[in-house]
Length: 268
Image 1: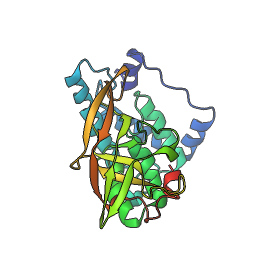
Image 2 (image 1 turned 90 degrees about the horizontal axis):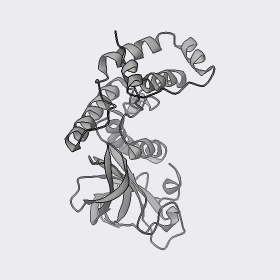
Image 3 (image 1 turned 90 degrees about the vertical axis):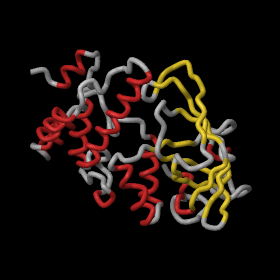
Image 4 (image 1 turned 180 degrees about the vertical axis):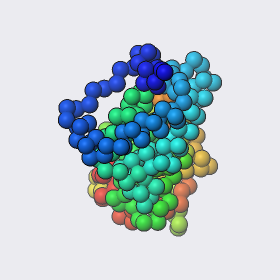
């Protein structure tokens, strides 16, 4: 019988070698976990999911397959295995997570199996600085694979130096008016949420005037414009995308208490 990782090897994929000693320790700690994970993946990883898309329609189909597979992983707590069970994560220890990552790697996949930069980085920040209400609202959909989140930092005049961010988020009652232009690398198939940094106290001390926001990517006022790149990335896309237009967001989207970001803007 041809095993899934044999198919992956036939397509040119070569799994990475684990660090010496790590697998043995993990297997000794959890002798049945690898068998369970391997059997589940064999039964649930769709054939051809790591293929190079043949065209735009196939790119979308593959992306939908990856998202569906992500939701299956999320239902078992395996999409974000180290995340707390309280918020729909796996709550697994390091050894079990090592085994899970290695077995997923056999298929040429990772966790999550799709581009989710804002989910990976944003969820960690929310765990540290978010209120309990924000953790309950934002974390379970990420850990269950129900949403995909992109992180937006770069602007036309600012990028690696976050102190140069000029995106303004001004409070207006129970909402923030966010006037933003971001340039970022995403993919062809969009996102459900946007994890972005903005200046909540214009003119305040550098870095200490920044805050993170979690924003619904479908809010009125958001537009995405493609920018052609020489290379490919994401789910087979060849675009860099730009977010523009003022956006009105609820104050609950601000990560943590209204501290104007002295901690939020420096933790990822």
